[in-house]
Structures are given as structure tokens and as C-alpha cells.
Image (cartoon, helix red, strand yellow):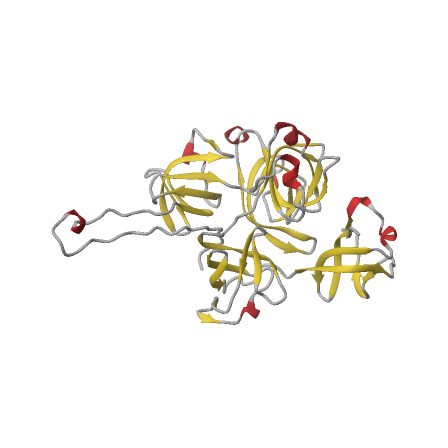
Length: 391
């Protein structure tokens, strides 16, 4: 398997030479490109002399470079190895390179093995001298002890003027408050989207508009840009980020962030959903294996058609990047103590990281039907979010 990437490849179909007759149809025909190609991954190598970059082991000639849908005047000079990028082109020459980081912002704190950007604490060892600097972070979603977090791929120091002086943050949307026009990304960063709503800059991939895009968007992957002010991310743009594989032939590498109990459906990178059937081939160490090998945290490569996985390859070097799994329970909440409660008799532990929807107290939910989400730590089921279910 190639190095960690996210790649969506839509095949190029070539027509060959004709044969037989003496008319023009027998002459060699030029390649016919039926669909554009879309590639997303980290940059392996940059060749500024030939205006070329290598992504997923393949070289591409760069036509132009953009960030946040705006062209960058300095083009390839702003690219660096390990940046997450998206390439769009009809051929491998003259591609448009879009820089696609997970976060852009100022490092506010660095410890021995962590740093903080845009209110999010990330596990990654950095040079302490980067504190206070603008950086671009590329990462993949991964289940952690605190819930869905980030596996950092690269942290690159940048000049903010080159990228529009805008902060950027991606992550799972939680705790939507439509009246207060706020939500959280993960359990840490509070996002105020009132400015984005006023500007009409809330987007989704269906016919809904404005705040309607955020309705029922809880747990979806979201991208925001704007500015950090007093620990709050003031968003001037919000986009629900979901990738629909329907109607496409795709190849994607990434991390399984959710999988159902019978392992017939899974989510890759918190936004790509695929199904598995009896024809799906699963490979590990050059041998075909059962789907029981698949788990949350598995790093895989998927080849799929119309959202159905045709082949899945497990990475033998890093087959599971997370020691944690998520769970969900629904039912009547009872038996509250200082350290636990039960849902339909099933014991669930609590700690300081628990979030209760609408700022309710746990005691207020006693006897009510709830939905609980959390992580499995060893043999313990630990709640991360509790929401009262509607009657």
C-alpha cells in the first residue's frame, strides 16, 4: 500500500487503434478521456524546475495552484512536501492543485508531545520555537479516547499573507444550537456561525440553504473558515463536507471511523460511506481474509463502484492506528451514581469529558429515554455525549 493518502481516482478510458478498412476510422485514434480525474493526498515530492509535483507516487505537471477556491499568485512556490492537496485535471499534465489542510491557524501552546491550534489539542511532537507561528496542519480523522480526533500527518509553517489571513478548521459537528447560532467541532472548539449565516455562506451538498444545511448535520464532517476570537471560532464560511461515491469508480485510502456490527457498511475518514457484499475482496499481507479483520481505526485502501467496495486492502504496516472503538446505546437512563449510570440495564461510565445536550444535568435525565455515544476503553464503556430522545 502507498503512504497515507486520501485519493479519489476516476478512471481514464482510452480507445485503441481501429483495424480493417481503408477509411479514416482505421487510423490511430487519440485517447478519449471520458471522465475527469480527481486525486487527493499528500505531496511526496516537488520539482519546481519542471513545474511538477508527485502525489500518490505519480508525477503531475502543475497548471495553477489555489486555496479556498482562490488562485495563488506564487503557485508551486507555496507548495511543500506532506501538504494535503486535491488535484483536478483531464490528464496528468496541467493539473489544478487545491491545497486542502485540516487546520490553518496560530499555535497557541506546545508541550512535550502536544500542541494547540484553533482550540484543538493535537498529539504531535513539535519544535517549541513554533509557538505563536501560523501553521497548516494536514491530518486524518481517527477515534481517540476522547472521541473522534485527528491523526496528524504534517505541520507546516506558513506566511499567513500567502493564504488570505484566514483561520480554517475541519472536524465533526456536535452540539448544534440553531437559536444561538453556535456548534462545536468535536468536544473542544465552539464555533459561532452568525456571520456566515448573515453572509449566506453556509453550504451543503443538497438543495437546502443557510441554517437549514446544519439541521440534522450533527456528527457530520464540517469545514469552517474565519477567525479565532477569545477562544471562539467566528466563522464567516461553513461547509458540510461529505463525499458521495454514487455513480463513480473510486479508489480511496484512509481510516475506518465507523463500521456496523455485521460489517456490511463502513465510513472512511468520517465522510465516505461504502457497503460490503459477498463479492468484496479483502486483502491483508497478499492474502485474502475475512471481513472480520476490518475494525474502527483500520488503515485501508478501498476500490469501489457506486458506493460498493470491490476490493479492500488492509495496510500491513499500520493496520490499526487507533486502540479505541465508538459505541451507541439507546434506552431508559437509570441508576445514576457519581461514576456511572445504566441504559436499559447496561452500565456506562462517566468522566469529566461527558457532554449533555442542551446543558442539562445528568440527574434531569433520570427515567427518560436517551441516546448515548461514547468510546470503549479497555472493558469500560465511557460516555462522551448524552441526548434526550424526542417523544
